Length: 216
Length: 216
DNA sequence: TGAAAATTACACTTTTAAGTGTATTGTATT
DNA sequence: AATACAATACACTTAAAAGTGTAATTTTCA
Image (cartoon, rainbow over all chains, first blue to last red; front, side, top):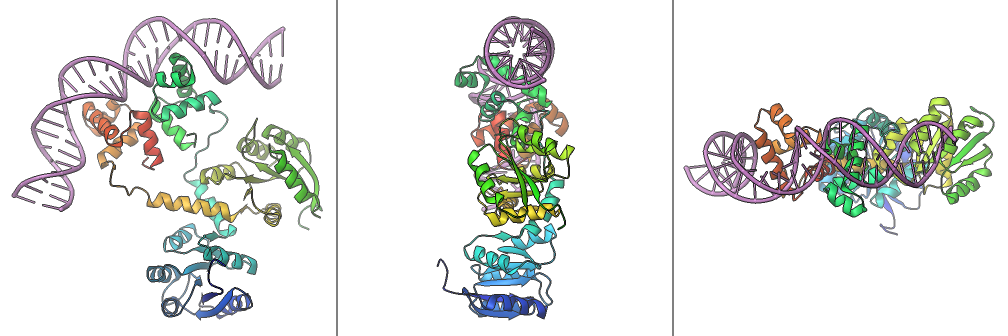
């Protein structure tokens, strides 16, 4: 066993139904030790600091002190405590904030027992876990922003790729020619062909293109 | 059953071992009907358009036509066909590109049968699925990006950053000078200072450095 | 307030890349 | 067999960047 024989948990949620449900799900498990509960963020922080707790399963929306603030305070004092966030909210910004605050896992409120146990296992092994439902949502948001696509229209040949990588490494046409046993004019031709087909105007923009399209 | 009695599949991968393995895993399943195979992107597109296929499980790296291009072509003609991408690559940008190209699910090559079946079930119910391993990787990258630039050793000044970005955009010293109301010799001095402090030898390597260090 | 760093600017030479055009050979694809 | 594309190679001109050195302001911060 890479961690203690049993894992002592703290369930923090302001809805009695949720805490009870989680309690029922977890109490029978072999690896689960003591299960504490808290009905708001303040109580969660207090118990986390006072009791011997390995892992906290908590909601984001709680009275007194929300999950975000609670997570920050707990991680500040006891960074070894793992925090699994359970939420209905899948807002990318929220997830991002929670992860920044130190959360180790993020799962949906309607996930089953198997996934919850998987998440506990992962975090106790110092891994992070984000449930597919939540990450799907995140990817959808990411798609809109930063992604550029290298498509078939303007793709580079094998030789051109070989050369652009050497260009990016700072080699001159002559050096590349020597390396590839080519004439320097050939290398220059390839360079110019790339600029033409990608509609770029010089080496700098070519290297930037290559970097953006993961060609290097 | 919300979809046909059985699901007809196409497995597209250039590695025989993978196609065979997936075939073995899937052939016994109640919901699985005919299983076609393809050993490259071109073949995958051809079969997808010719045969009656519900769902395609495919690799990204394939000869002839890669997964990205294949997915685009297939979705263009037959958008109802679901595409599950199986890959070792977890590059966030790659995942994003594939999703944009129309992929419905993204799973790791070393995932088990259960997860594969889960992905098939999800996509056939018009949902998307991204395996946790892949999304975790994305988050790790996002975190790296957010933290970034911390090394005081060889960092660039504000002015230098401003100039390197314009260089990467393909502007010449003269153009940059005009843009920033500077003399072209000043721009050149900045350029040379950057090369010196970063121990690089030319524009190409400078732009590569900038891209690698998220300076652009 | 004084030192260090940043920003600005120039001269001069050499090397490299960009712009334009042509052309041969091999290799797939149709 | 014809076509298209990739890869190779060259000539010639102009533009840009690299290499080396110097130096005056201005800003920052210890």
